[in-house]
Length: 370
Image (cartoon, rainbow, N blue to C red; front, side, top):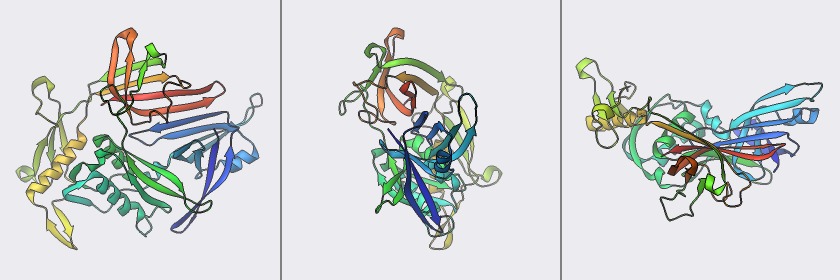
């Protein structure tokens, strides 16, 4: 496996991306792919004039065996040591972090049911692709895959951080977003924004081959599990615009209304949701029924489920299941620990830290119950 470093050259609203160097002499590499947030990487490599020149902030780092994930260098640290030698620590996040540089402005409003894929792509277009000073050069819309993105909703959003808002939508519906590099012409590359969804490979389905991590199969090397219900919120009171008793309000819960000790209430201030919208350049009022639905959507985004997380170490060199061939981040799998009598028949792989160092390769997954 080799590291690829790409140079980005911006010329006004145009961006040129070219392959600058290929490196296989690093001491260690951490490659952290995340499903519901922006992933990251870290390279530890000998500090010499050539590497200092190659690994510069703003350049893109990729791998020759991964055509889906590319990181942008955000920090470079030089450490000198007479005994152990001089080293560079290069850190950054994957290209989705570029969307963190934008907020959602002006207000984006949907009062008629629309697919989440259309909503996200329109918001990305409005805030990064139009030909003005807010444009992110070299970025274009890519593919959409997964039925979760076909779900419909109404919503109104303004001034939220673009990247954070997208991942909020992803976690709500079970999808993910990613920006990758695609070779355009010759040695030129462009950035592509994709929406996707993981596959179910657990014991609870029969469409795909089952993926089971278990101490009985010797592919589950270590295991930890934690559950926290203290942050749970399952019933929202949402208040929109207006004063006193005239303030628009509604409630929201997912499914049957919780009662008694099963009820965890939440107040949602949605005063930023406007009661008007722009239609063909004119300001018109939003019908009350549609406005209430906008409030309910905001309430649904604020609900919190009990947090359950499982971190493990799995066999990196197992021939039974190969990472990024048989299963991927975002997939649902089965995890069991027979010694403790625990089984999670359908649990989502939401993160994977792939590490390379002098000891070889290791895989550290993070799971989340659906």
